[in-house]
Image (cartoon, rainbow, N blue to C red; front, side, top):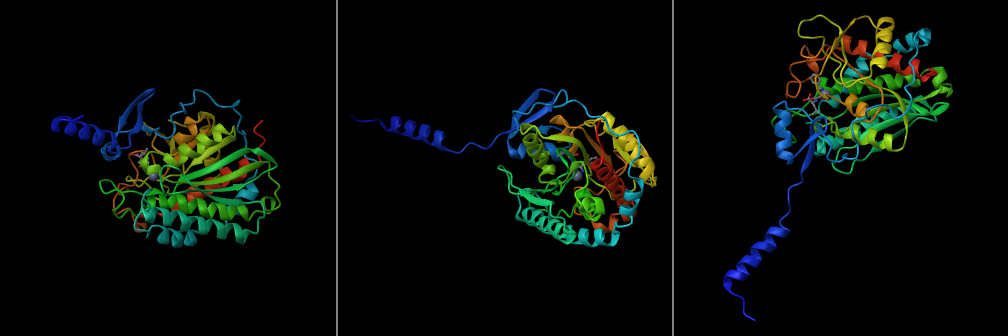
Length: 370
Ligand code: BES
Ligand code: ZN
């Protein structure tokens, strides 16, 4: 049989059309229950233009939790560990946080799909392991959490309590990015979120030094999380919390610390207590801790969208809070630029967040949630 040239050309065109790789499409939830499909380029353009969404590409089975996975556990109504927490506050070393942030923010960037982003996460993992080793705590473990869809791993430290299943988490994102030059651009991310990452490392060191913690004498499991790929759509935290939910893990409380080193454009120092995508009862509890353990007040604030990793915990049915450096809009104006450098980080303000995070972890390590 003879084929015409036209038929052969048409067959060739069909063959190449079916074998040419299609671009990966991303599923973005732009409003509750409303999704769109976009390319990666389109997705990052939306982020740079300040258009907000949940990237649920890898997590389509997770639907925004209408209620908790398990009965809401009440938070304590009083301060219970005042003396021990105040002892731990004395161990927070701001010079060490500064030294480590200098190193951490000197990675060219910590982008989720760049080799620097992977190196920075591995550097952090090495520091975390040093802290655990120096503490001599035999129960604390650290793991690099690999993600299937991108290169940068997350880091998790777990310290099992007597009631193993009840877990209290302090989380922060470890990546950085600058707008309009993703991947290649210089993104020191000193405030966003080197500040929260190095603060959480120091809080880990302080909590592990406590004698009761050293003896394993605490009810609940404590976890420190450093999430990959927050700046690309809360990806690391969504992966982790959707896995925790699939395993029916009981996260009793999650505190997100994203940007902790800037007092505010108006110079009036206070925490921003974010009330959307967070848990009202846990927020009330944080007000108690702020009043007792820190030297500054709070002001309630709204992000208006799923602006950081507390929203991933919330989406998976876990109580979460976000204590921000200042109310939304009054925050560090240099984030997502090459000028988000350590010279603009205020370590006295970092100290206030460190005091609060230490109190949250230590008080809840011993809480009965009943
Ligand atoms: N640290 C910011 C969140 C933030 C910035 C909160 C300014 C409040 C004020 C975070 O790292 C971030 O940039 N989030 C993205 C959203 C994310 C889903 C890509 C944002 O806010 O655009
Ligand atoms: Zn951030």
